[in-house]
Image: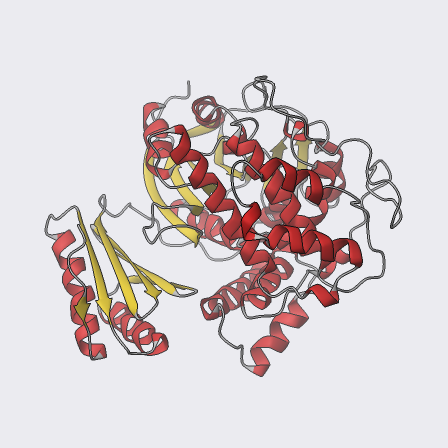
Length: 494
């Protein structure tokens, strides 16, 4: 429970208040929320808590205008607000057993080194990068690794430069795609999830609501897309006794996270399972040249092996029946094997209106983050109109979402040779498609972390750890954003 606002006039006093909240939760209090009024600058407070974390062997992660601390039996989020800092601490389960962290594979050392270096620059969201840091991130946009280039894109955008990875600029839609058209001409005419009013049909056909062809091109500019993959890779290295030689990737989509997984663990053979007929050709195209075998199937009807030492899924669980998704993962994971799921989740809800509001707020934060530094004057005319519509606060109500979506989906053609960040605008149309589908609870069916964990435990899986790697709404680690959850299959497969 949050008490009255407390004045803090020194870094020492600030550290004392954070440490007290941590100790209260370690000693049995379920949660502690403090609002600390202070005129001290955020960098001073951030550095003080980072130093406290080092002295107390706490795991500290700085994220934009906030940071997270993890110690045995407690987790705390510190978030800067106007003229105040919110400290939210909660009691947690026992610290999971980890193996000695596996070293990076020999042929992936550079990828891991650059990933660690770039994620270390992410805390400066909104801050100005040093000249050498900006040069490093700019060069990394052109890196052959999609993981590295996507991370660099995120770093630059958060620091004020609306970047796009070079592989996205170079990545054509493919010979079988309808994506194209000329300015002023008709946009894509098939395979793009043309939206119609919800008719009550319950579907898991992704392409019925979301443009898969555009998703294949623009998903790399999604905030924190690569960050979740780095955390997923860290959990694999921390919870596996040996490097995995085989990995199951469930719900691979067009294949961007699957390729990133192969870049982090190039010695593993990856089996990628994707049910969407629209996404599957993109998946085949993107994974070519990697040790990846693609299967056009869903996890509930996949007939492959049942002894994968590691099974993962990125951004797919909310498209499916969560319980059956988890059951399928357990069925195909070896006893004692590791399951890591990365996905977007929203804050807890208890009613349809509460869920609707949570979905709208969550997705518009991603949209605002993607467009934060995009200048209208730098864009092609069609994207300028789209940008104005997306940023209009009066259009962000449940009653006006469909008209906003219909408007922003018009004239979606490629701008060949245009070096402006127009792809960031087009990604936001996809985010809006997901938002509307989520409100209708059709294709997009987001849940919240506590419920996901409960469903996993109902299916006999053992919870290991969880991290919110990117926040959208709320200060708690359990609130809305991009989450990564590690689970263990304890025994006999179902």
